[in-house]
Image (cartoon, rainbow, N blue to C red; front, side, top):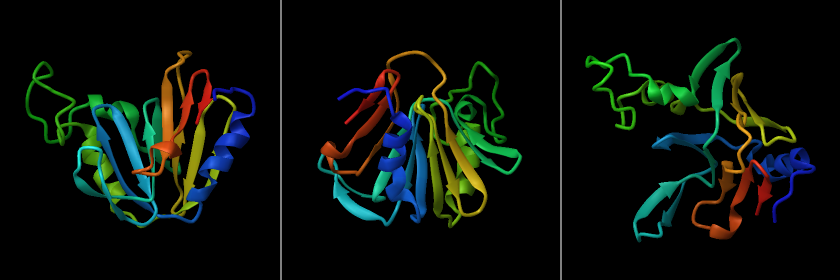
Amino acid sequence: MKERCNMKSRIENKLHVLIGLPLKNAGRSGNLTWFSFGQTKKIISLRGIEKRVGEYTLNIQCTWRLTKEHEIIVAAKDIYIPSKEWTGTEEEFEWDMQGMNRYDERIVEFKAMNILVEKIEADDLGGVKIYFSDRHLLEIFPDDSSEEEFWRFFVPGELSSHFVVKGNGIEE
């Protein structure tokens, strides 16, 4: 079901389960960023591989940033910027190689923190603010007019749990 009206309340209701849960992990696959929340559990992937995941996962495919007070800690476009360790030329830089970009470098510090989700705020355009216990803030803000997927929230291992926010509404 796709629906644009009342996105704010639907998003806030869906993400409300995160309040009080710890951020467990963060990472990326290409330019898709993911954040994992809650206690760690074992699941068997569709390929039959056992892996450890959080209770809930948020996959982001639009613009986002993680801030603390008046500083951007890490943001979506950091994957396209070489890490401090990079010594090659601009032409040689391959942003998709794990560990080579600023995102990979800066997310490590954030993942090591022991923080809890305190509050969720959404808007009617699919944007979300997730406030953490240590004054960090994760902001997700769709920044184009396409009908493509902006982000999704789900329980790993449960295909029926996917809550997908797109440019033309919400799909469940």
